[in-house]
Image (tube, rainbow, N blue to C red; front, side, top):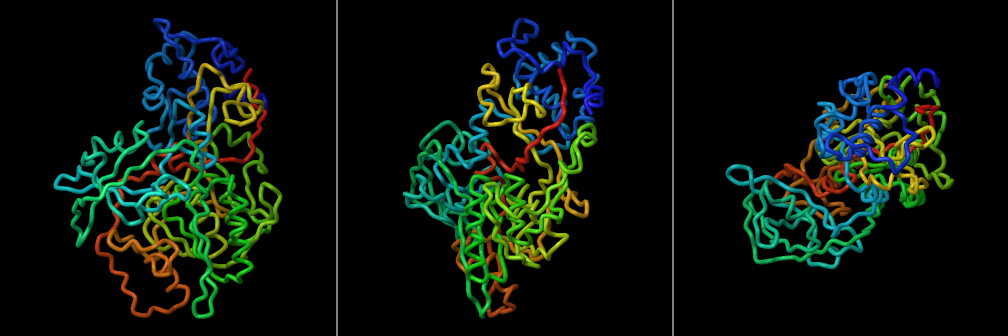
Length: 491
């Protein structure tokens, strides 16, 4: 295995050596440091899913050290270097940041936020104006103490109307405090009103993704409802407790609400799927597929993930052993949310209600300038904080593989279409977790077979431009948090 990898990584020792002193600075022409670019290239050369499709990432791309350094210095801005030289044209989701601590905290559900989660729309004569609508409020946040709630609209910030040119700075800039200028909607017409709401971002806000857990007893049927807003592995015990409640309540049908869930931990998706379907650890949940050179090095055991009978903390998993599940989806349902749908599909009936999902079928790893990590160079590990190059705080979050389900299917880049299409209605968003909220009500109708006189006509359908979660450090990435150790001898 060691010889195979040395062949794959056939650059000279001088060029590719990962055993470098943290105090060494690699300088390009004119003395400008290119340490960040060097870290990015080496990490992407090993791990990037499309490594063989990017000419500049080829193992034999640079015959001499001088040519390599010249290439690193071709873009002095690391962001431009990554985008223009390392990213494959079909890659929609890899990203980077200049502060790895901000990114890694987001993996734990920690962020700088005022707790307002919202969607944004384009409107106006030229589709350049923007308005926002409130999706939900994070508990114990600044927004939770203010007069603002789900379904309300806003068209401006600090008296400035939102548009495509300014919304990033106004809503997601460095300003800790801003004031939203609110609006009303009637018959599809948006009208600013006199209401304003001041919100302040707080550091270290923790969001528990297990947002709503309820059991409904309708027509003598016990229906469980879970709104789960992110696959954050620090809350796996909370998730298991939710299913413990469902088991105790005698739930026979389950509605998973992923409508605003952009993904996260692959392992959390495995645990959730086990809670829905089975704790039989002989049944394959998913199998990883890496780039061409790494795929041959991983063992079958390393590539396969089976359903689980225990959480990471060793707690027995509470499972419903269902043969059918209902999933509420929108275009914001991505990565690990879609992984649950795909992983369960070969085993049980998965009925999707809502709109088409995002189509995020690749997983990623957080990479930092830690080349000496044994068996997994550059992959971030909290216990190795003191090993990260102190002169380089950048991190990259590249796509490194795809997860196939037990029958080998992974091709859902166009997203999963709903079995029952129903868009959210801006004029009737409803109360999350209420049995009359339209998407949940439609799922309950499907479960019970009781149609009644409910009208699901949508007056003003949600046509999303982007959302607040897409500006969080984690965005909509699917994070592979399974331990990795390969015999990667790059010295």
